[in-house]
Structures are given as structure tokens and as C-alpha cells.
Length: 324
Image (cartoon, rainbow, N blue to C red; front, side, top):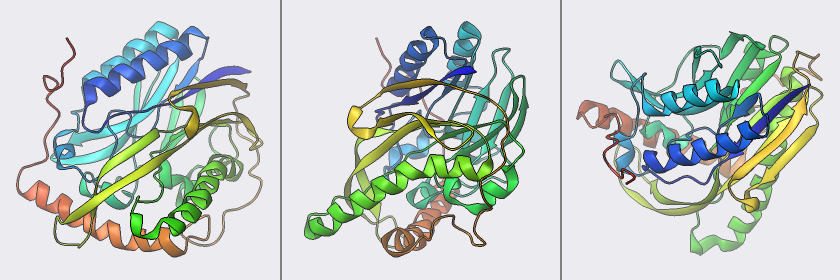
């Protein structure tokens, strides 16, 4: 059995110093309890919402967040992973970075940005599969966990899945509060079942790290423009440890705030419980989430093209918001 931990964060938008410090402290908590594998969330360096400060929040391939992960991996003899915005050759990617204790670094670029994320990065094409000292490991982030293509490239091949999310809820608009309450409840259930369902389909134990707290910013209105309206949404947490049979070993709800969950799992591939459905999505994505997907993807992508064309995509200046 291997001691593992997954981290739930309450990060800030565009304040990488604060967020890396928070991640560092929570890794210390997990490492001091003997965790040999530690998962951070997707976007552990900054939350994502429509906020044009995020055009300047990516990192180069060698960066302070990666330095922190390497230092902590070496200190605790642990494998640690999480995602952040990384700029390479003029484009930005949502890069899940997995660091081994000896300093070996593996990278997976999320295949498709989700909704507003399209404004800040572009998709990758790798399979998310790594050979590590702890055996074969797969990586996936957020809505990659609800796409059948992710299952097909990793099922039966890996002995561990390292995953994370930045899963929002209803947009916080007062004119349809009754709908928002129903959506929030259904959305919470969808987030809760996603990690164990994915683990069962892939056939591997899984660590899933999430974000909590209220997220405020903009919501893009019209594709081809940068017009936005305010949004205030709950980040849904659901930091979980899942065993190879798809059972929940430990769980942290968003109402519990930032912190860690720990437990023991047996590494190694298992037989997937069933094949994924013969469609794009694992769940039958309909209604409001599908409408948002179809609307927000082109709205965000047009903004990314504008930001790239006008030279607004830049790496983060760590002298901004520097801690004393």
C-alpha cells in the first residue's frame, strides 16, 4: 500500500505568489504525514475566470512553481503533480506537470480548453501517459475526465491516475435563482461521481485535487468580442482519493475549505469495470452545460486569438504582489 494525499486549494485570481505559497504549505502538510504521492489541482497557480490579467499569468518551462515542486518532491521523496498555464513557442497550454523525487519532470497538455478557458490557452495532443519510478501513470484534468477519448488512450495501461479540476457551478445571476439552486445541486452530484466513475473506466486508482471558494469575474457574452457580464460562482471541490475498484477512500467537500485528504491505495492497473459509451462525452451532456460549452468555447477562442495577435500573452512578473 502507498500513502497518498490530494490537496484542495482556495486560490486567488492572478496572484501566483500567494497561490504557490499556499500550495507549498499544503504540500508540507501532506509530506509531513508521509504521503509518497501528492496531487495538486488544475490551475494551482491561479483560478480561471474572464479576467484579462490572466493573459500575463502563464509561466515559462523553467519557473518558480516548478522549482517549488522539485524542491518538495526531493524533500519528501514524493511524486507531486498539478497543472498551471505554461507558455512555449508563443502559445499557452494548461500543462499538468508531474515531478518525481529525483527531479524528473513529465508534462501533459490538456487536450481541449473548457469554455472560458479558451480565452487563455490552447489545446495539446499528447496522451498523458508517463513511465515513472512508481510505474505507469496517467494524467488528466477537469473535463478530460468526462470525455471518452481520455479513457480510450489510458484504459488498462496505467497503475495510477493523477487528476485535478477547477469545476465551477452556476453563474450567480439573480434573475433565475430557482434554476441556479437546482443546477447547483445537480452539478455538485456530477462533480462528486466523476472521479470514481473515471477510475472505474480506466482501471486504476486515482487522486483528484480541486478548488473551493467563491470565484468572481467576467462571463463572455458574444463570440468575436470581449464583452462580458459579471459572474460569481462556487468552485466545487470534491478532492478525492479513489482505489483501483472505483471506491472512494477519502473525500473533501467544497464546504470544508482548503486542506488535504490522505489515505492508502494499492498502485497497479485493474480491469476496467466497463467500456466507455460510444460518444464524445461519458455522461449524457445536455441542457445548460452543453449550451455553455457550445457558446463559451468560440467566445473564449476568439479572445485568445486577439490576445495572441496583439502581444498580450506574457509570462508572469513575480515582482507583482511579491510577499515581504
